[in-house]
Image (cartoon, rainbow over all chains, first blue to last red; front, top):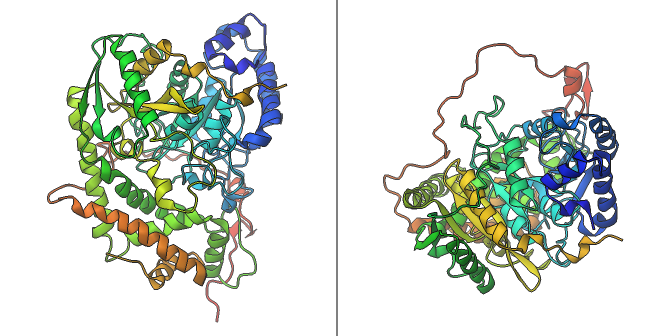
Length: 487
Length: 97
């Protein structure tokens, strides 16, 4: 049995009594990575030498001077830059890229005393829902190695689900934290847009991207979000809003809580098991004094189309910086600069990235701009207003995170549209900018299902309170995949 | 709005500085056609007088104090540059015959 079954609080108790050391925790992470990651494929780069040295130094810090995350191992998604540790966004075009500064969240992890174990696999440039678009290698779902882990933070979710690390950071543009968290049976939070600095997060769609924590339980998740949140002079879109103690919000009390359940989230296209797991979750919360009502988010069905236009448009602009000149891969045997750009990008980017760059370029072109880009931005306004209206009367919105559990590797690769439909329940949240979490709420054929709890702007505290109350009343989060046991 | 032709894909690829083969242009034309056709459902929406949302937070201008801060060292900046000479980035000829 690994130490990583334990919560941050339990690990700190063991550190306090010196039953274990920080060096032990770091070693445990690398041991499990060595044993499991050949099959799981969650890690792209390891930070073993530095982390091991860091752990030893940290063991000398007196316990009274440590915070609640001090000495605990974490994996970081590979689109978050780490000084001196290769960062590729799982793309060939960034092969060998060695960042020259740390992302703000990485600085914050260091301040909290966390030990970075390595960089986590993902869909190339965070574009995808299955990790099959990784330009390096696919990730497999620890709950079934023939299944996808979800995406794009598939490595981040799989590493935690397999117990390789107890904590990870992911990023979420249209569901990229919540969908893999759901598929891998772990807890994943997409904070309010602006809650966490994006400085050092390689941009995909700047108006939608947010970094967030993935953990095995709600309390650890709240602790980690607390550590990485806050306004940052280096990110002008980070919000100057107070960061409350999310852990203090975990009162276990949901009496009088008003829950909205959008009929669009339980209707057509949503699997029976996912639907039933949400209805069961509502009963659990009702038994604790919460009430729920069905509501409508009438523009939900337009979210997917609006999202693909807007995110691809922003990506086409953001990804123009990858030109073979200043970093990463550079095509050879070219005769002039334009050819260098074109060949570098053609050879460096995978098909999904190219598809989205072209869709974005097309949407922003003269003649199509109004019909696509502007129309999608207007649809975004309507989608946001749907949420505003519901939140006038309710505290949280509940629904499934995904319509089905993890699908088989290879099942959806041929058809981009079917793949995109996977994110139908997570995308509207990014368009509105509100926070949402996915927590384990059931199983279908041995594969985890996720409950999505959506909150008001900057009200992650209420989301955590509800998630924690549900977790305390259920056992789903205690389940581990078969792969968990390492001999 | 309707189907996307192979020629349009090649045009867009050129704008996006992506080299593209005939076979790829064909494949992408089909796939992008399907995606844009799907996106046309947005036309069902009456968006008269609906303001477009570019950004969800009510942020206007975010200014910092006008104080000079030291940037990164040039040597460090050049760490990932494939080719550089005397502190300058080197690229292939911009104009060729």
